[in-house]
Structures are given as C-alpha cells and as structure tokens.
Image 1 (cartoon, rainbow, N blue to C red):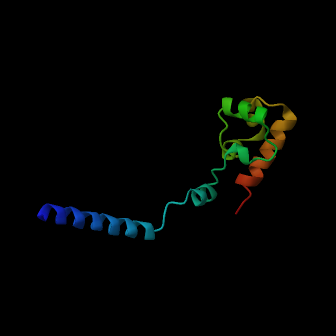
Image 2: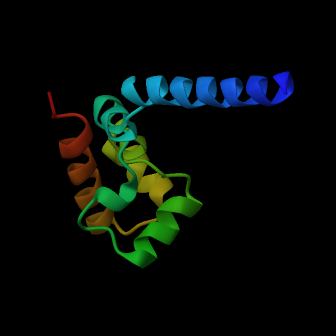
Image 3: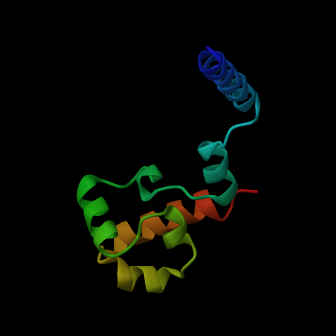
Amino acid sequence: MNRTKKNVHTKIEVVMAMKKLNKKPRFNIEKMIENRRLYPVTILTSVKRNILDILFRNKFILAKDIAVIDQETFLSRSGLDTQTARMLKREADEICLLQP
C-alpha cells in the first residue's frame, strides 16, 4: 500500500514539475534566427530550385554565407552565372548586413 501511495505521489510531483516548465520562457528558434541573421538561402526571393542545388553543392546554406564574402569571391565560388550571382549577393547583403 505504501508503494502505491509513493507512486501516486511521484506522478503528482512529475505533473507539477511539468507545469512549472511550461511557465518558463521557451527556446524560440525564430528569435535566434532573427538575432543572429541565420536565414537559409531559401529566403532569397530570386532563388529557384536549380540555383538552390548549385548553392548547396558549393556550400552556401545560409544567406549570411553569401553576405560575408566579397562579390568577386562569391562569383568565383558560387558556380552561378554573373547576373544571377550578383542578384543573389545584393539580396543577401540587404537581408543580412544592412539590417539594424
């Protein structure tokens, strides 16, 4: 009988602990992405599926990966035609670097 009461008591404690956890602020991935500007390249409006494949193959996953390098380096490493690469670079810069 004591064993049953102990189990019930333990279950109640677990439920109460879970309720306390739910009241604490939760990790918010959206805020982390905004604060650190960790936007995926898919956020760039000019990116099409075929461009995504090329960017991923060339290790450009985040818009920040594009924004932090100079235009000429991006042109040579991206594997994209000049016009598309410049358009993506401009867009990544606007999203990642020019925001306050």
